[in-house]
Amino acid sequence: DGLDYTTSRIELEGFTVAFPKSPNLQQESIPSDDGVVPMSIYYTSYDDLATSFYASTSTYPQAVVDRKSPYDFLDDVVVGMIGQDKALVEKRTISMGTIPGYEIRLSVYNGMMLMRSMVFLEDDVLTQITFFAPAYIHFHPKSDEFFQAFDLN
Image 1 (cartoon, rainbow, N blue to C red):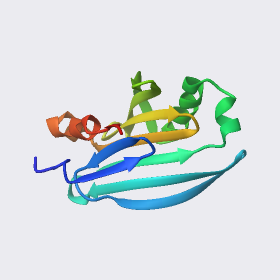
Image 2 (cartoon, helix red, strand yellow):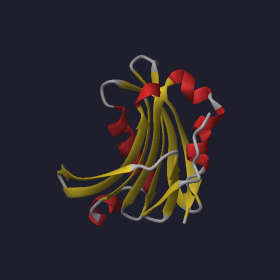
Image 3 (cartoon, rainbow, N blue to C red):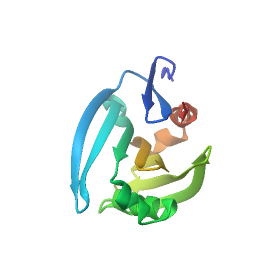
Image 4 (cartoon, rainbow, N blue to C red):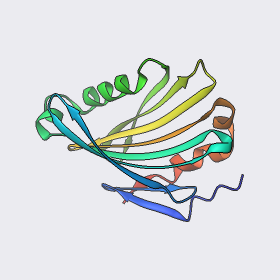
């Protein structure tokens, strides 16, 4: 109940996201068949609640993005997120202004944990925010605040 989303706001490639406490930053370079994809990941967690908050941006080669429609590209992202230990529970088409996206929910560890994400593709930049927590926490009213505090700059 004590989460405060007003103190740790950061800007991500055209978006603003608010974390419940100051996030850490991790920079990665992900190799792919089409070249290296730079990724910036902001994250914070509450280990005592097994709860994590993530926001990331990845910049893809423009040629890779141009090969598909935005939603076909996002479909591939969702398939990649599912992996071996997750099951897709819900995928809903959303947008932020004119930026196409999905809101997805994944069941992890046979439903003990849930992962809720919003992913958006603007030009060649994929922006994603994710809340990962035990299933019961997702029903707490505070769980929506992370997503409500995500907006365009």
